[in-house]
Length: 127
Length: 147
Image 1 (cartoon, chains in turn brown, cyan):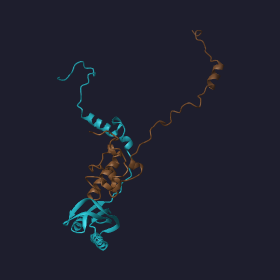
Image 2: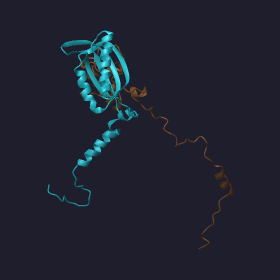
Image 3: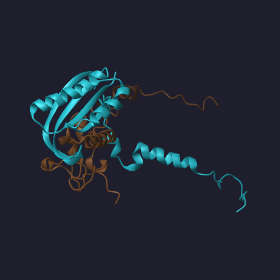
Image 4: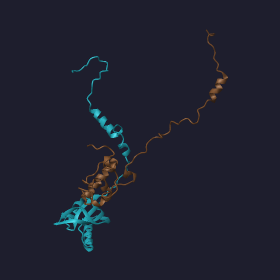
């Protein structure tokens, strides 16, 4: 029975070949961060580090409709929910203090630059 | 100690009268044991809406802002005193707020609905309300309940 088992000895040349085989240095490093990840978006007020204030009527009236005086929703303004809440609260404060119009945007602010396109909301309208 | 902001809309009047009105408003705060931190002139301009008070219609006003500390219980009497002042068109007291720093969450909010955290929470909340259902792959070869 023992004679049936043949002792296998590796060839010396094969061993030396295995030792010389090495991974090349230009192999991809799979631990790296996703190079195709998109840049993180932030809203226009957070980007410029602005906190809305009720005394700054020129700023907060940019978030008001010139036709109805109502506040645009966050799907139009493109603000984060925290900033949108702040803007809405400050607009109501300014209106009750008599600093800001309620049923229209004051004509002196009509020429201000547009921060967003009303006809092209960030998220679809619900109507 | 809470800092308050008092926004006063005064009738348009010459300077000496304006100063006496401002002093009167300030003394009302001092009488209640308060202190004034700041007095700011926000200018004289057209009001966004006309206001009729004390038997006259006003379309223009001088805007002033007081920043003051006073006991919170005195605010009501302070506003009442100002409401009886014929030179004051409108008055409003707000707390001066200090907003804690926050992170912009817009990036998470503009994700597709299935990836938004609030939507995922809504779905899991709705799943909780679902009644337990008999699953047909449980090994029983008949339906154990009444159909």
